[in-house]
Structures are given as C-alpha cells and as structure tokens.
Length: 463
Image (tube, rainbow, N blue to C red; front, top):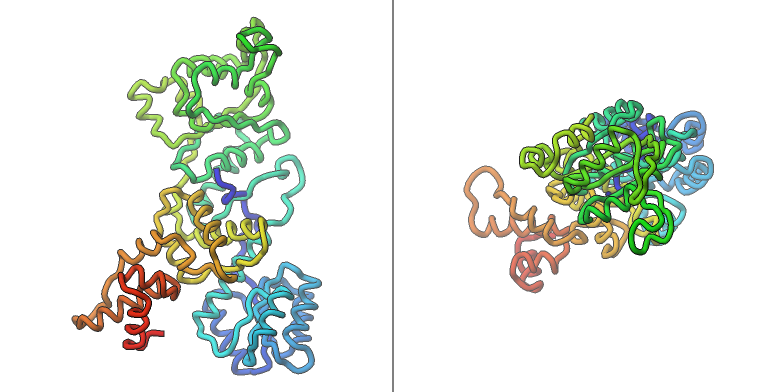
C-alpha cells in the first residue's frame, strides 16, 4: 500500500484557521492585503514595521509571513533571516515592486517559499498563500511521533474531509478492542496503512506486526508460511522454522488479499482462530497462540460466501468488525493535501527543486477520478516531479490523459450563440489553460503545428 497516507494528524495540524503575519510600510497596500486574506478565512496580524512584526513572532503562533522587501529600518530579507533562525517552520512569501533575478534567487536560497513581484492579482496571491500553508502543514506532520509504545513508528493518515475524519475516529475506537478486523476497499486506498494504525494504537503496539499477502500462493506454500514446519517435514526442510502466526504471537497478523485464500486453508485457519493454537507442518505438539487477525480485500466477500468460494464461518470469524476504505474520488477535497505530502516525500529523495503545484495542475488532479486511488496519485506526482523543468509542477508536467480527460468536459460559455471564430478562440484559450501554456502540447491536442497555433494566438490576442 502507498505511504502517501500515514500517521493521524495531531491537533496542532488540524487547527484552523492559519495564522498569517503581513508586513508592508505602505498603509493602503497593507489594508488591501489584510482584507483579502481575512476573506479567505485566515487569522491575520498586520504591521507596518518589521521590528514590531519580529516581536509579534516571538510571542504568538504564526504559520506564514508575507513581507515587503524594501522597508525602512529592517528589510524583508533581514526579517526572514532572523525569524527563520528562531522559527524554521514558518514559511515566507516576499513581495517587491523592484523585482530582479538576483533577488529572486537569493530569496529562494535563503528559504523563502516564493518571491512575488508587484503588481500581482488576488488569485496569484491566493494560490501562493494556499501552497505555502500546505507546505507549512506538512512540516507539522513531520514532527516526531508521541512518546510511548502506541506512538512510536505510527504512520500518518493525511486528510481532513468528513470521510477521513470519520475513518480516523473509527480506527481510534476499534484499535484497543482486540477484535479481528476486515478492511475492505479498492486497490490503492491504503488498507495496509489502516492495519498498521490499528496495531499501533492497540494494546499490542509493543509486539510484532507481521504482514502476509495471500494472493497467488498454493495451499502448501500458505501453510508453510503461516504455520511453519518441523525439521524433516518435507524434502528440503533441513531445519525447524516457525511460521508467521508464531512470529506474530502477542501482536497482529495482517493478511492482505484474504479473498484469495483456498477453502481448505480457510478450515485450518478457522481452527487456529477458534482454538488459539497452531500446529507446525510435520509437528505433533500444538503451540499456544495469542494473535489478532487484521485482514484486507478488494473483493466482495459476501458474494464469495454466496458462491461457495469462502466459508461463512471463516468469513464471520475474520469480519468481527469491518472498516471500509473510501476511494479517492469520494474525498476529492483531500487531494491537495495528499498531493503536497507526496511532493514533500519526493523532494526528500533528491534535489529539493520542485516546491509547488500550479492552480491549473491541481484542478486537473482534483477532477481526475483516480481509478488507482492514492497509489496512482503518488505515481503521477513522482513522474511530474521528474519531468518538471522549474520549481512548480504545471499542467503540462502531468500525464497527457489527465489533460485530455479535462478537455472532454469543455463547454462553450453560457449566453448567446457564438460565431465559429469566437468558439475557436475560446477553445484555444481553454486548451492553453489546461496545458499550463505549453504550446507544443496545445498544438498536438488541437491537431495543428506550432506555427499555426502562434498565428491563431496572435490573431485572437491570446497571451
């Protein structure tokens, strides 16, 4: 299962709204900036003096600082340097009316999330603020886990939608009960993650967590893996070997793809669960066993019972409690946070070049149905980060089928009928937007060469 879903978010991570500090010695600019951010739901502290803002940061919680660069007394660069030395988790966006390449490079090297040149549109600011705060939230999720056995090594579950919040609450409720759990859901939704969370939040957290995939194995291989064998039990059994059930004693055995387990093996496992003892292959003395079984499947096991492929008594034994994993398309609001989490991990594997996802690219991701769920999102973003030519993933960096899927949803503007020329202009602008302005890809989709696209853009006044 993908690591794109991990440890439950702490209370500090879940808090809203975000705290934003803004600094600008221009009173009118400061007022406009404050009004814009407060409309977005952020808690804003505004200062016209950088030193007073620095005093505020010493006393109050802050997630993001937006500062003008050219200010009397202390520049935005100096403020950022001092603040980040004390509070490295704070993100910075620097704003200037005197933008140049050297300052932008310097700002990025010093740790600024973005260097925004005036004049900028409200949408541009909203996009950069949202991206910076998503990055800020991911820093919080990277804090060390809580102390104690139940807190060590727990993975993180990303998401704030009602479905994910309910899922987290269910895990917290069921984990300490010690009953067997069946996790259902489509492939790639993170079923093993939930199994690890159930174990990590249970009273068995300091005991082993052992995972086993039942898919595509014969009955004899499954028996050998789960039950182990005695020396001489079969040709090649030169030593005694404990099985996974013994190795999980006191802890949790996670059985993935439980729907693929053969009927004969279901009978043997049912006896193990009922009698709480295991007999190695070739053995004669049962071994006492204390293990919790957490299973997972993408199949409809109730239908398998009806068809005779699964024993009803075995099904009821493993399905004391059912947890269903929602498909990613069912909680699309979590896609931005998941995407930035994946991006954060990808950056950790190589040069931290890619820092953000453009608004157009994020819109494509949110509209895509993700048949492969979180695992597919992870693969798409790893690919996008590899082909991205600057520090922002754009629509043109995403797989072509995402763009083409979005283009299939093109609708002409509402209102009066359009001329053929007006429709052509509107569609070209639409395709350019979906490809992030990537002209070669736009020309390919439109079925024309780049020279023809350039002439049409010039004709219609499309930038």
